[in-house]
Length: 244
Length: 305
Image (tube, rainbow over all chains, first blue to last red; front, top):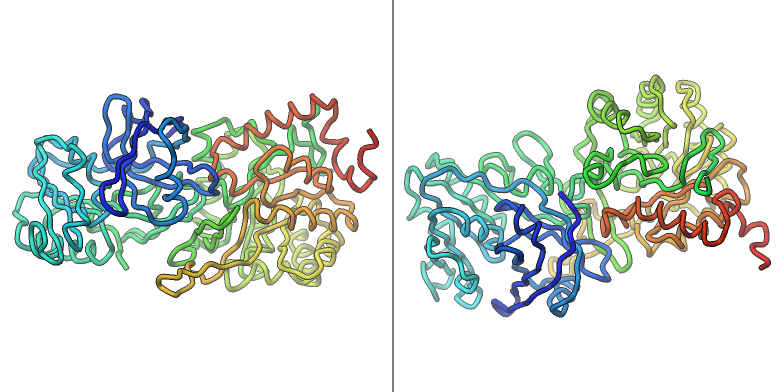
């Protein structure tokens, strides 16, 4: 963990409310593990924002952001060249075994899995959304080792159904699953993985204040008791998190 | 030497402290800077039993601040004594352990156990707004403060700093009661009760419904409390509430604080605390003054330059 200075290089809209932002931060780009996050300063706001690092190249990191409140609006409006401070890399990332991997990202949750996809030798990455307009995965220039698929609730693109339905049909023995998305999706998936005895990891999202484990603001429940999403997670073994 | 401050029961090499609850036991921040740079470390609250804290959302941003409703999550006294305190004692920085509880017995149990350790003192948290019982119910009523502080003094020989709540009509009452009961210092203030509502779900945002407001938004309120208390007590005051820059610190010193605590500003800038120490020293040097000269100066008619 260290405090880094980053410079906004470019920004691109991926959908009506999702944008990606590339930030020059060489040490972060070199040091971050898949699933880890940065705590990003947004000038003028009291709290930082936690974002999983979605992609890296030699000197830049990419964040994928959903425009949700005033802070993310300000971030979307920040011009290239703006200097921002980022604390990171933070938290515990993914620990994928070798073998076939299935990545399931519901909505903005997909952003927590893209660096993992970039770094796995091979994987299938399914992004879920309500309709085709919410999908943006192919715009991230993922390597050809990633087989991108989509699932939509209305069937307007890819598999017709949600990601739990998709997993129900496509899970194979020997697979490993990484997932991030809304709680109902993770709950359904947790049950399915347990029934089929398939291992996996979930990345959780939570509001944070300190981002490092000091303030206890981002607690979640696990079978071992309270845990902190920022320090003990954001990635947890799929069967250990207690989803409400 | 300019940075040195006198708390009566101890001299601190500088007046910059983290606020309880915003700094854990310092472990995480020790990866970013040397804790020895601080005047002292104020720990997360310790209760006799481990506490899981509140369910649901615990933090929310507000204009110029934030709300929190953690609910005193901590590992309990045993973990504090076995894991946290031994670690912090090796960092070479004076330690104020924050103590909280639901009942008088809770405070006594924790204070008595901690009394056996070499600490700067205890900070009695009589002001947590986020738990249903205890804490604030002791701190808002002068008789309650007097009784509790007196009882703690009977079982624990360490200096006692009493952290009071701003959720009162008249701070001078609990402040004087704490002094009369033998408190060696006061911390003013804890957070102000506040809330936020999620307009989409039409429900209170925080799991606890209400939370404690902190950040620059509350600085003027905190300053007024320090000012008022400084007029009626002789024990030193540790100012706390919305400090985010060196000039905020100066204001608190002038209002009568002998030291300050920095809380939620650390979340925006994790390196803020050590930087404030450096900037404070520069500020004093440039003006050829010292902490000692500034403490309470606004009560003495200020500067005539």
